[in-house]
Image (tube, rainbow, N blue to C red; front, top):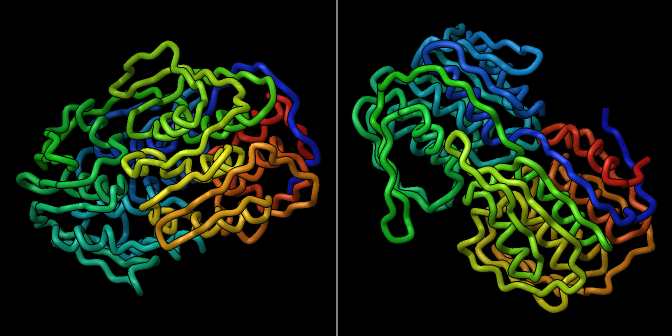
Length: 441
């Protein structure tokens, strides 16, 4: 059902403590890694979203035992490359690019063929970035124009590779690392730094991995075919989900929020650095290391004197999922903000760079979009009173949630379509919006 929501008034000032659901990146990675471990692995606070549900469905179809208990999820692994499924099996990644690209890596040694498909949005996205390195391993993949559906047959005689990754894509890096698990010898990756959840997971469960810095690159080495034991994991809150409430608070009058137990992995906190450069005063409280990830409570209060930013491109990969929210903040800043080398936004669930330009124009903000950059001419007095409708956005969950934040902070009457897309990553989003005082019909 494609639910439509109406928002007709701004949110009142609030002072709240909230928690957000489990980190999506960690939830998907836990399931995929646990499926290859020896023994029973448990995850607490696993994200109950469509992307994660599709991960568990695929694992079940591949012969993995998955159990949903009252307070945790359980996966019974039987070791590396222990999947059991019929030849020509069809598996469906839904809307999840992370799942689709990582599952190709983890099935690199499976000899039975399978077809990987996805929804309409995912089927438009480029998979050449993982097809190329998997070909080097010796895996056979067939697709039309490097898009889904992809037919693949693994290779029991995988060859270790050396691969250079220049896009700053954690999905590409992780796909290669998963393939390396089943490959004899040492696989090496030279890559632009990006989300490092997979590396942290590997270290936490004692998979042989080395990582060092060489100039602006990370050098990662994986020693393959080393079996590992099952493990339990408590998943912290997702900063990409928390980001919506960070910006909601920042742009609301006289408001404060404390978001408890959030993953603040440095590869994910670019939005905090960017917003603080724009005069926000976002603080981490109760910082600690928990099961290889850094966790903290995030404290935010309103800011009515936002500064523009010439965003360093070094922050791009650390902010990639939050740029739409950052652009909304720039719309309320005094002056011109500039973002460059952000073409990766064109390869998300929808072309987010193109959408951002249209969205800013709709709310009366001048912007200049190029192939890989965006200039935003902010207006600190921006306030809306017209009618606005969000539709035809390829059911991109982050576009949908951005629209809620804009409606609640800028005013006007908003009609937001296809809000079921939120279930992709943050099913409890609307419940929390209501908890902090947002009025939604």
